[in-house]
Length: 146
Image (cartoon, rainbow, N blue to C red; front, side, top):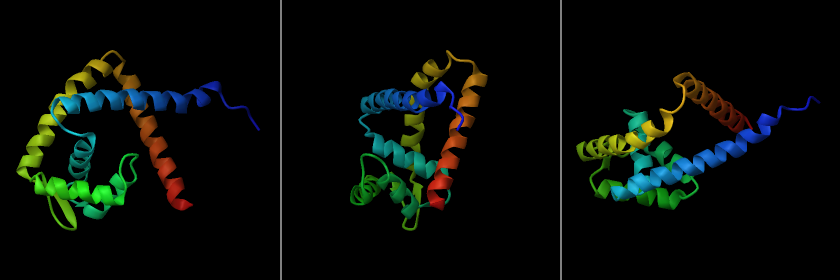
């Protein structure tokens, strides 16, 4: 067997530390607005999958996170419905209030994201995004195949 390059071993560790640091930054920014990350995540999932954001798919995605399970995911969706941010039975959508909150949070998060990423070459960022997307797709494909 060929010995893998040393950077392969560094990749997962580096990715984990980057994810942790970015999560801390995101949590701090959301806390400034009194928002928990799970609320942001629901708004993102619905917006990214609109107009066909399946309630079951959103709930499953939430339940697969580190902080939620199936019951707490359903509780979160019910809370956001009561707060008037989302609506829908089989398919979820953002209400006008939810759309406004999502837009304002996206703008609030944009500044530190810009400050962090603008120090790097745009081509390097694009390559990193493509690489991580490809890794994610392959890993998910292999997980579903087994």
